[in-house]
Length: 311
Image (cartoon, rainbow, N blue to C red; front, top):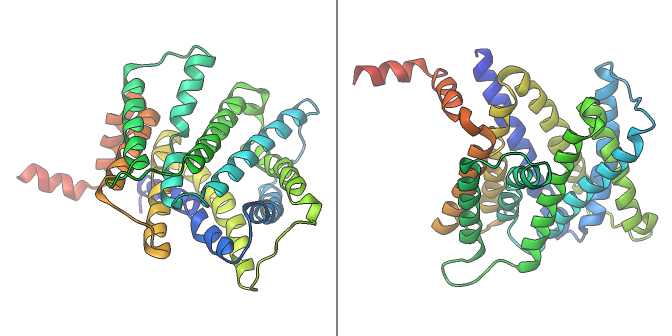
């Protein structure tokens, strides 16, 4: 496999592994655990895994004293984003929640436009309309029923928190800190929030069966660690923008698991809404370079190009 094809494969794997959140979280809910307990164990197990990754790569844990308050704030933002998303699973299908969460790049674009005076292009404006149309299709079903307002607001809080986190990292001195170290300390400070919410262990709920500990471990391994490693590798092979575009497979993965494993509903209306949101976010990420990336993608299939030229 050539490096470009390998990069696209690894980038897709990064998105798919991050889309496994509902696959491992929902059985824990069914066993009686609540989102606070699930996320407490997820963060608790993920921290030593990321710490080992830092050591194996020969990186340092050291950060400047002035960066500690920033990392603490980022940890609270990411923990809030995780909590709001996992709470939303109690109010709507996990696949739809994951799709609505995927609008965070659009929120990033809006924050940069209105908070930092970055130019809002007509393409971005059109993509925002596409995303709003997709959300509208998801929010109201064909029979007139609507999504839970509470669940929708929770996903919006999750997306907004994550968007603010991305902007804050870009615009602060944390942009010069290695991403792996930032992630480690973000999880460490985020764990403090969940430690407080489980009343320092007094209201912590444990899984009812031994095998469910595997779900908790998988939540700590696949979305944070495996997805991070694959994303880093894919960026090195194909660049950050194509890797980000492949992130569209994340909500698709969550929808597929929701339908195939948990029996969630999938209608033409929902498919159209998901497609509009993914299309809008893809164009937001790619910007004016979408043609270049499509050309690079087509070059991965020279045999197909020869067949087309012969028609």
